Length: 320
Image (tube, rainbow, N blue to C red):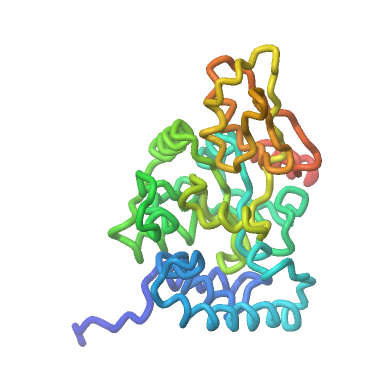
């Protein structure tokens, strides 16, 4: 009997990712390859995407070609009805602004979730499914956006990967910058990042099986998605709420303005003001006002909130 160890070309998590991608009707080899490169070399990938890598000038043209090939494959081979928006990145890699309460629920679900085509909530042509297999499998990863910055915010370990096959892939390929965590630990990270004034985003990507895979806790000084959004690439979808100031209570102290990651809050002629065209309804300012002068109001123009309980109840009612 040959006792020699067999050569293993792919790690178990890579094979699992490929297997699930192969079973997806909306995926392809190009998507799988893109997803593998993204997740396997995420720090280089994000640094290049943010223009922070030294080889950016050499690699960026190749990424544009890869994106063009992938777009044409999806459109003509898979017959997906995709229309470009800008450079197409916002269609395929984007986040949904969520409040702390919604983030808590996403890391606390007790069952597998299968919700597809949430175009009203995730207003992008692709990557708008919430499919969570093994919701208790959670990993925290050192934030690639923060890590790519020479001067970055702390702590680094604030990006949470949810469910399979993503959690195992990250843990197996990034053992030095990730670790498995419990739901309680995930909740603690969310609470601590909220206390720092950082925004919670649920992230979706076409190459990550066209679905939700992570919750990031973002600051405007480091986050590539916020920077892209501010520069005209609509990479982030609003929460479905807007902030409202009660001027009978507000003393115009300006504390809230320093925490607004979208620069929607300001003091104009000595009075606190909200630019509703910039407000994403994250709710950070609400928690920073000791006088409770700020509240969130539902705003249909800002989309539909990502409330996992309501989505599950609606799906259950539709299937009965």
